[in-house]
Image 1 (cartoon, helix red, strand yellow):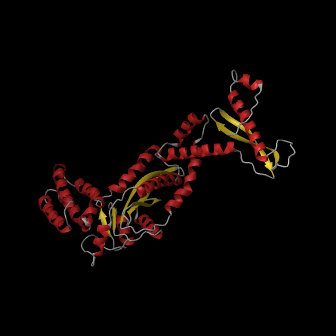
Image 2 (image 1 turned 180 degrees about the vertical axis):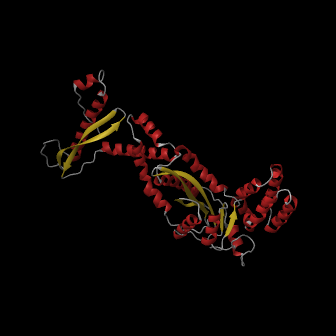
Image 3 (image 1 turned 180 degrees about the horizontal axis):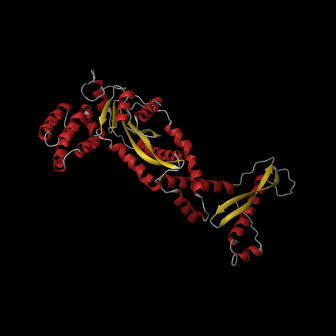
Length: 407
C-alpha cells in the first residue's frame, strides 16, 4: 500500500474548529499533496531533480472540480509531457461517479421522477443535481435502448402476442396521447422474448402495419398464431402482414364485450356459460355449447348473443392447438402483466416531456424483462407443438379469418 507524507498548516488545523468550509479546505490540501506524490512516483523524479530514471517532465497544473460529501473541491492536477500520468485518485472517483450515474438512471427507470432524484442526490452527496442534469445522465441509455430495439430477430417465433398502451407525451405546448405498440413472442425453443416496441400517434391500421413490417424487416418469421384484443386496425394489419397465420382474439376482453351488452341480472349466468365454451376440448364441442347459449339467451340477451356468434371463431382459434398450449395463448394476460410494469412507473411520471424520454423508459424496462425471460425457465416445451405441426398435412379451415399455416 502506498504511503504519503502529508503536511498541514496551523491555520488549516485551527480553522477546523471555528470556520465553515474548513474541512473542505483540509481535504483539498491533502488531495493536492497526494496528486503531487503520485506524479513524482509516476515520473520517478521529484521537481527539478536530475536523474537518469526520469520518465517525463512536469508541465504545470490543470484545475479540476470534484464534488464530495464535505463540499466542492478544486484540485490542481499535475500535467506532464514526454510521459504518461493518470492519477489513481481520479480513477477511483470515476468508478464512484459511474456507480452514482447508474443509480440515478435506475431510479428514473423505476419510476422516480427527476425532481425526486435531484432531491435524493442532494441529501446523499451534499450537492444539488438539477433535473436537467439527471435527464442528461439518463440519455446515456438511448444508444443502448436503440441498439436493443433494432436488433436482429434470429429465432423462429410460432406464437406472438401484441398489445398497446397509451402514454401522455408533451409535444410543443400540448400534451398528446401516444400509443406504445408492444410485441412479445415465444420462440421455437420455448422461451419468451420482447420482440420490440414502437411509439406512434394512434392504434390505426397504418401504425400496426408499419410496426409489423418493421418487425419482419428485423427477421420476425414462422408466425403461426397472433394473440391480441379486437381492434379493427390491428386485426386488418395481422391479416395483411401475417397471411396464413391464425388470429386468436383475447377471450378475457371478448367476454367483457359480451357481458357489457348483457342485462345485469343475466351476466353471472352467461359468464359461467362462456367459461364452459372457452374450456371446451375442441372446436366442434365448443360450437355445440355455443348453440345451447344461443337457444338459452337468444331472446333474453339478443345483443350479447349476436356479439358472441360473430366473434366465436376468432375466440376459439386456440382450440386447434394441442391442449397444453391453450391456456396461456387464449388471452393477452401475459403481455398485459408486462404492461402493468410499465404503468406502475408511468403513473409516477404522468406526462413525458418528449417522445425520447418515453422511449427511454419503455425500452429500459422491456430490456430488463427480456433479459429476465432469457434466463428464466422455458415458457413452453415445444416438442409436442412441433410434432403436432408436422402432422398438419392440410391447413385447417373454419378456424379464424386466417388459415392455419406458418407465415
